[in-house]
Amino acid sequence: ACGQNSPPPADPAEQDPAVSGALAAPMMSDPDLAAVNAGDAALGGGSPASARIPGPLRSAEAIAAARTEAERLLGARPAPLPEPKDSGREESRAADAGTAVGLAETIGAVEPACTRLMRYGFGWAARLPSAIPVYPRAAVQEAAGADAPGCTVRAVVFASPVPPGDVLAFYYSAGQRAGLAMEHRREGDDSVIEGRKGSAGFVLYARTGPDGLGAFDLVTRGL
Image (cartoon, rainbow, N blue to C red; front, side, top):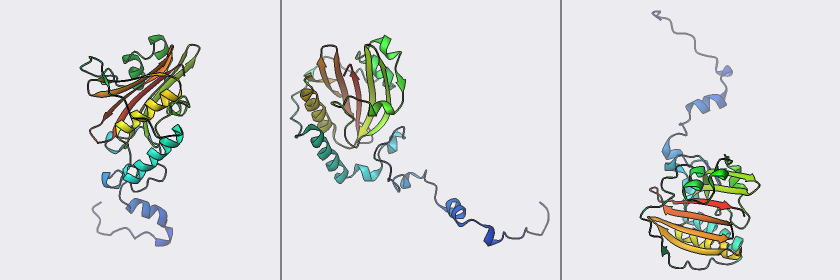
C-alpha cells in the first residue's frame, strides 16, 4: 500500500467488453431511466408506487388501446354508469385493508373461514372469472385467492392509467352481462361497484392514487 509502483494495467484482450459495458452503464435504479426498457412491462406487479406503470404504458395511445380492448371484451361500449348511491359511510372500508386478503375480509365480501384459506401469488389474477377479468393492460400489484368447496375467492389489487370512471363502467357492464344485480355507490372517497347473484358476486373499489393512476381493489366470490 505504501509502494510507489503501480500494478501493470490489465491486458485489454482479457477484458470482456460486455462486462465492461455493463459496469460502466448507468444504474437502472435511476428513476429517470425507469422506463428505458419497457419491453416486458405489459403486466407488472410488486413495483414501487412511484413507478407502478412505466411511462410509455401511461401514454394517451396506451390508454386508448386499453379502452379498445375493454370494448372488445364486452362486445360493445360500456354503458354509462348510473349515479352512485350514498352508502352512509364516511370512510371506505377498503382504505385500511392493507393486503389483498385483508381487503377480502375487511369489506365483508368473504367469510373469515375462507380468508384463512387464501394464498398469495400473481397467478390468482389470471384465474379471475372470465366474466370479471383484470382490466386490460392494468398492472397487478398484489393477488390472492383460494379454491376450496364453498370457497372460490379471488382478491386482486391493480393500477391503471385509464380513469376510474371508465374502469367502473367496464365492470358495471360486465356484471350486467353476467346476469348480476348491480349497484354503484360511494364509500368515503371511493367509488364502489358491486354485483350479486345469490351468494356469488364481486365488488370493486376505485379511486385516483397520489401518482395520478387509477387504483383498484377487486374481490370475486363463487363466480
